[in-house]
Length: 436
Image (cartoon, rainbow, N blue to C red; front, side, top):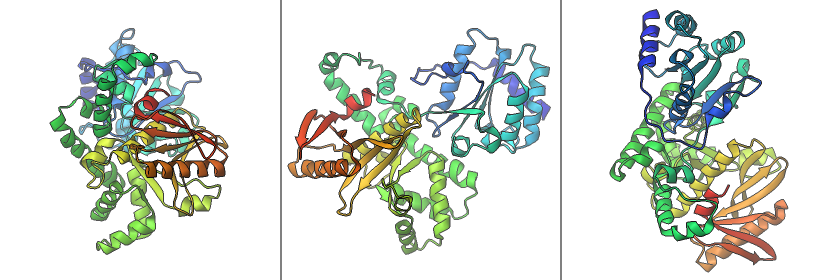
């Protein structure tokens, strides 16, 4: 055990940090927060959590020695899945390093036995800043173990925003100057098209076009195997995979509907098990589902939920139904951006709206106790019937929910129009993504 720890620690001391492209999330801001908290960095696999951590370490090493910083990735196959490894870690650091350990970075620790109790002890007894990252909702504010409540701060990492995507592509614009953007509009819209089609996962963004889909499929298989089946010890693998295929080819789901479909496909699975499997999929950060807006909790639980995926590349590469559907891709892109904005403001809740006539509004944004904004996403607003249908639903929802901020996100249509005595704002997707 001691030999393994020392080998890994010595490797870390000699390790050269990779070249890192900066992102908007700057973890350096959390170094000196008071009171001291365990900083928990969560998000989907390969979304950039490790690089965000390494970027922070790079900044720290400008003024700190290597002895002051330790980074461990618990997906290293040499690390045994035993509490004893954790118990022996800090004594080994103190024995091996001559300087004082000041910063401890732990990646994917949530699979270790008793990890949260160990972390609580270190937090209570050592003068060390602790950063923990993971791709499981076990690390999230919803499921963080009781012993860590009140002692941690969660930072969510998402795929690249459009601004970050343009930076990765070395297309840096002056976002405050609309006229300047207009001059480069063709270049911007071309970049937007790639962003909508292939998403914002960093490795895929930087990959050659012919490799993007292949990488997405490898991520997808890894998530299914490691983050869902192995992590949750799923027994009925085929039923889980079938449910996931149904979800990624749908815009929404209800447990009853998926259950009936799986039964018709001869999968033996109970409703309770199916519900658990869908929870596992969401817990991996691969998918998120939004409930219908209702003041009655029973309605929220009873009605179908709309589904969105962490990155458009999965809809484009894995789905057999929506790969060429720009409307679906636009809506998913807006959902991910709203989730990004929600992560920085816990007062925000996200829903959709639907009435008895099946008229629907894509996003209901609730802030504290009031409905703050309603958003329709409509890629092509040129068709008069489509436009009328979308605006009619938006106005009806606005009247019912007493909301005056009505918006339609489009491909390129911009302006303000009056429909049934209501002011409706039209905003191109690129402008909405860049102007928070």
